[in-house]
Structure formats: C-alpha cells, structure tokens
Image (cartoon, rainbow, N blue to C red):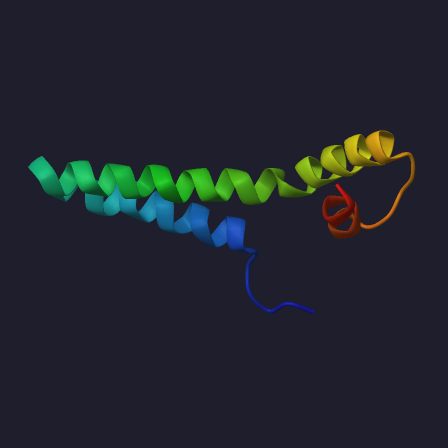
Length: 79
C-alpha cells in the first residue's frame, strides 16, 4: 500500500503552489519562465491522468489490427 499521494496529485499541488503563491511575486522573464514551467507540469499531470485510457485504446486497436490479444508491449513489438 502506498503511503504517499499519487504523482498526479503531487504535480497538481506543486502547480497550484507555483501559480498561486510564487507567480504573483515575480515579473518579467522570471514570471514568464515560471508560467512555462507550470504549463509543463500541468501537461505531464494530464498525460499521467489519461495514460491508462490511452493504453486501453491502443491495445484495442492493435488487437484488431493484429487479429489477437497479447500484452500491450508484446503487440507493440509484433507491430
């Protein structure tokens, strides 16, 4: 059993802290670079959140294409 929050929740907390607590205190290039960093964190968080569904869709497409089911890694290798 995990004793720490999932990666997506950690990234969300970091993003909120940077946006709400740190960003208002910056201006110019530092604020711009922080906004880019926040956007990158949010992008990774969304990718983590959507990964399982994306893997399931890919697995279904590969199974249809290859005519059978196997693990996603095996089907990728076969393709």
